[in-house]
Each structure stands twice: as C-alpha cells, then as structure tokens.
Amino acid sequence: MKGCVQALEEFKDIEIYITGPEDILKEAFSKFKYDKERVTFIDAKEVISTNEHPAMAVKKKKDSSLVKALRLVKDNQCEAVISAGSTGAFLTGCTLIVGRIKGVERPALAPVICQVKMVLL
Image 1 (cartoon, rainbow, N blue to C red):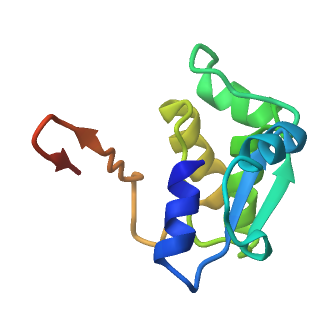
Image 2 (tube, helix red, strand yellow):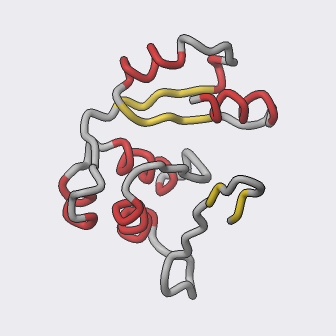
C-alpha cells in the first residue's frame, strides 16, 4: 500500500488498479493520503496461495486477485502487474492469460532481491 501511494506521489501521470477484497483494501488505504481519482479497486473474492498447483489455481480461480489483474493487462486496461503472491501462479497466469510476445519462448522473471547495502534486480 505504501508503495502504491509513493508511486502516485512520484509519477503524476499514472493510475493504479488494485485487485483483492475491495472492502478490506479500501479500509487499509483509508489510512493514507493519496489522489483517489487515480486509484481503482477491483473486487476479487478468491486468493491463490503458494501451496496450490499454479496452473490449476489460475484455471480454477477466475475471481482471484491475480487472475483479475492479469485480465486487466490482457484487455489493455493496464500495462503491468506487480505481484507479491505465488511466483509459479504469476508466471503461469502470464503465459496462459496475457500470452507471450511473438518470438519469446519463455517468460522472464526479474525479482527484486534486497540486501543490507543494495538492491539487486
């Protein structure tokens, strides 16, 4: 949440779509001061956990925050997705829902790894 608010402050030309349980998200974000005109909450009732089979979870949980976020990209409503959830489900969902760029055989993964003195990508 804090990262979203910071991004809105730093980048004046962006809008942010946040998927998840809308009532919980709105309550959590009410603690922050931000431009509400640039944030859209998309309600999602299901969650994909890290102990689920990635492909099965993506295929079965259509009302999950991850699947809904990836659909926003597929439908050209958003340009990117940031996820702190299941990496396997995220990569699987990217391939199954968004699809690959022509000529790209496998999706790339660029995790941010924080260390004491630096951040690595």
